[in-house]
Image 1 (cartoon, helix red, strand yellow):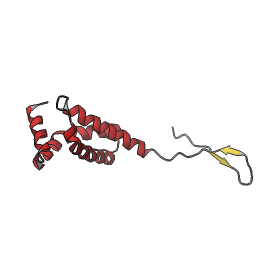
Image 2 (image 1 turned 60 degrees about the vertical axis):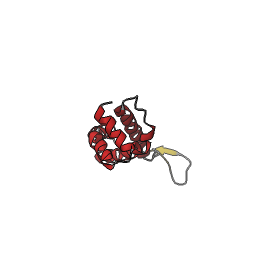
Image 3 (image 1 turned 90 degrees about the vertical axis):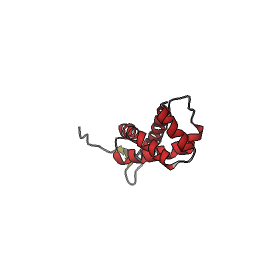
Image 4 (image 1 turned 180 degrees about the horizontal axis):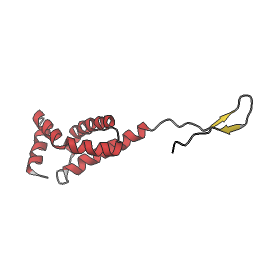
Length: 114
C-alpha cells in the first residue's frame, strides 16, 4: 500500500470527509471500469460503484492493511456485480402451452434471429 493510500485510509477511519472524497476519486474510475466490464450496462455499473463505496466505508475498520487495498476493493465490486446479475435475471418463461380443453401440450415456436 502506498503512503498516500495509507494516509487516506487513516483519514477515512478518523471520519474525515475529505479523506472519503479522496478515496473515491482515487479509485472510482477503476471500480467503474470493472463493473462495466462485468455488467455491460452503464446504469447498472454506476449503481454498483455507488454501492461499492458505501460498503467500503461501512467495512473500512475491518480492512486488513497488510493486504492490498485495491484487491479488497475490487473483490467487493466483483461480488456486488455478481449479486446484481443474479437479481437481473429475467423471469423464466415456459415454451410449452396446453391447448384449451385438452391435456396435450405443444411447444411454442421461437424464431431464431441469427
